Length: 158
Ligand code: FES
Image (cartoon, rainbow, N blue to C red; front, side, top):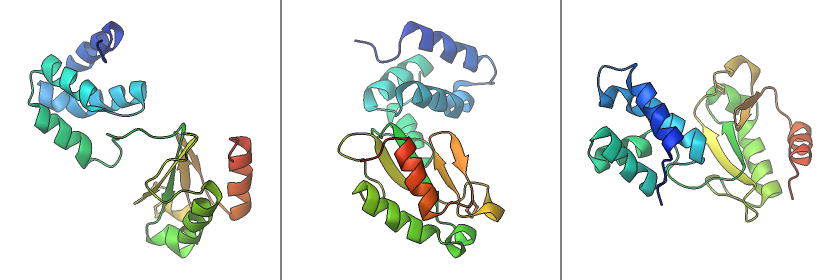
């Protein structure tokens, strides 16, 4: 069974029209496929290399190089905590430890129920509003432990 469906193939061909060559379009296509599939597994990358007529290992290396791209499954809620200098000075590393305790996972892991994955981030572009975190596509600034509790309650953490 194909991992990239007809609608997705059409979208890929639409994206390709905006770029001078297939390699230039690779990143936007990978982001699109990640949005569609939550992560980029090898089957998707194999099919993509056929569509783009590109080397599989090249595409795989690109997918693994960028931290915003995922080649492993993640939970429904992908939490990223900024641990760059400005946020660390505001207590983000303590927040990471707090979340690890609360979710019973370590950074880079996914909870057993598949609801949460926890990652750190190098910067979320909210440096004057730290500590900053991102949950899926939403950003939260000036986050405290209480905010984490509220956030996890509203997203049904166990
Ligand atoms: S340092 Fe945390 S958002 Fe930039």
